[in-house]
Length: 241
Image (cartoon, rainbow, N blue to C red; front, top):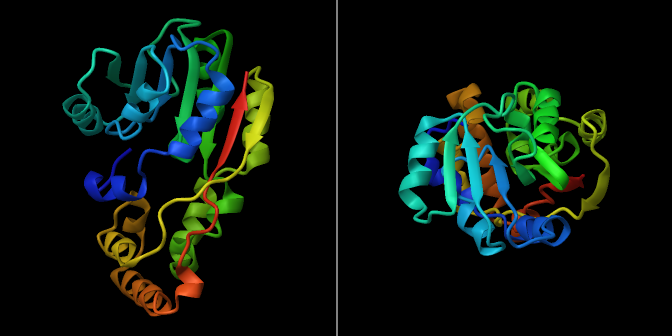
């Protein structure tokens, strides 16, 4: 993943406690499980994941910058970080008990092949956990109510839930659990500041004028707490084996 400012990005993609708790509850039959986190970024989720089990954590990302940041911020022999491709995982067959895709599925060029790779590296009785913003949820997000050109592009990037379910089944998984959506931090002036600084890469596609107008509308609506006090539901968690 590539972002203009990883520090700002992390503020709105913090460790997903609710998601990891669900993943731990429904997937880790052994505390010694070996986990692969696909699209791990700079290791934002790593410490949280490590706190939930006693096994080894492997994070893979296609950004050298992210991997370097992860190694600098995570000081434990249980965490391993590799720069690599989700569509061609550099691991042997049946190497992991669990493969996690945390808010990364929409960034993959070939989701179908990535899930076949997940099936290959998952051992007997292992599971896959997908935390994703599907198109149905993405359309409700604050960024896309005020930036129409961004909404148009993002709609093409984010898959439909049914599509991912079909990909999982084609790869040989059974979807055994669909968990409740959860929330990200409340909408506030710091989010406006982050948007102005184009804190995630898709914001680079909109013009300065659209960015300014959209932020102005958000700032106006923030004056009415009943409208923007909380973000809408954000993600869905799919678990398969």
